[in-house]
Every structure is written in structure tokens, then in C-alpha cells.
Amino acid sequence: MTQKWVRFVCALAWMAVYLWFQPAMARGQGAAPEEIRKAQSLFQAKDYDGAIKTLEDYYQRNSTANMGWLLLGAAYRQKGDLDKALAANLKALQIRPLRLQGSFNAAGLYALKGNAEEAFKLLQQLRDTGAFDLDLVKNSADLKSLRADPRFEKLFPKPEDFANPFKPAQALQRIPTLPVEKRPRTGSIMIGLRSLNDFPPWPRRRSMRSSSPRLVCANTRSIPSRSTCGRRAMR
Image (cartoon, rainbow, N blue to C red; front, side, top):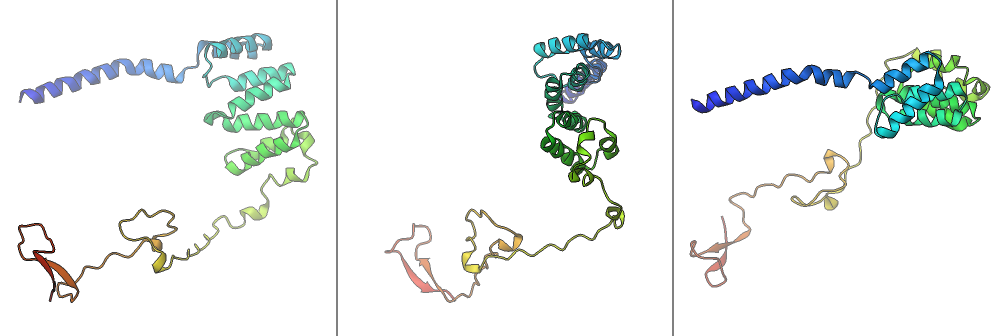
């Protein structure tokens, strides 16, 4: 009875600690750092130099920070420094929540720099995700130099792509099984099996009336040996 009361009191203590620190933890996870908020205000005020300095100082102190890279790329883009803007957006696309927007911005910067191959590579990745609005690609001024390329029109879906949205699944091809003589023995390490049919068959239990000879010991309490055991046919 005493142990139950001790566990109950400990559970209440842990719950009280969790409820006490939960608001602070929520604020710490959802709010942007002060430097990021300051850089946003400077960017909105068109003070791009101030925003860049604030963010660069912040990243020097926090090398693993994941917020503000798109803002830094936009500030460099407004200043006309395409190389640093591209570097910031390439950093952003490595972060999962910023991957789509970072890829789109980087593709536009590659197009402005005349690197169509890298631009189309990123645009194709955006198309393959199926989660990005391709109208932004069609209307982007940064991608204007790519519109004459035949690959640009292939990025957008055609009307026939929506004709049959529920395409029947392709029938799975049966993988040929291994011959019986090449299957691994039961109990061995089975590596490289390609389907469930490649597993060896279950070992059959021998019948109690098997006619194969077995080693029968005369003295069941002693260790079988040639002197005490002989081969007899079990029926």
C-alpha cells in the first residue's frame, strides 16, 4: 500500500513540473529569435544592409541555426549579389520545411546567372514532389530566360494527364524462384532472397515408423558411445 502511494505522489510531482514548464517550452519552439524578428523589420523597411548584417552576425554565433536563410537570400537578391543569395537559398533547401521555396528561389537565381541545367534540375524536382504550385514557375520573372527552352513546357501537366486520375495499378510481375537445390538450408543465414517463394520449405517431421536406422543406446543414463550403443532399425 505504501509503494502505491509513493508512485502516486511521484506521478503528481512529474505532472506538476510538466505543466509548469509547458508554456515556456511552447514559446521557445514557436517564436523566432530576436535577431530574426529584427532582420524582418529591417527588410520590410528596405534596410537590406542592416538585415544582412543582423543575420550574418546571428549565424556566426549560431552556426546550426535553421531560421532566416530565405530572408537572408532575399536581402542579398535585393542588393544584386546573386552569388550570396544563391548560397543562402541552397542552405535553405537543405532544411525540410524550407526545401520547396528554397529550391524555387535557387532555380530562379541559377536562371539569372545563365545556368539553365541546374535551374531545370531543381524545377524538375519541384514538379516531381507534386506539392508546389507550378503557376509560380510559369509566371516567375526570374525564369523568363528558360521559357524558350522545350524543357520548360514539359514541367507543366497536360490535359490528358487528368483524363484518367485513377489509373489501374500495374500487375506485379512474379519473381522467378530459386531451384530447390539452390535454396539455402533451414537454419542457415538466408541472404539475397528475392521473394517469399525463395524461403526453403518447412522441414518435414519424420514419422515415428520410419525405417531409417537410428542410434539407440542401451544405457539411457550414460553418454552414447560405440561400446554401449548400436544401430537398430526403428519401427
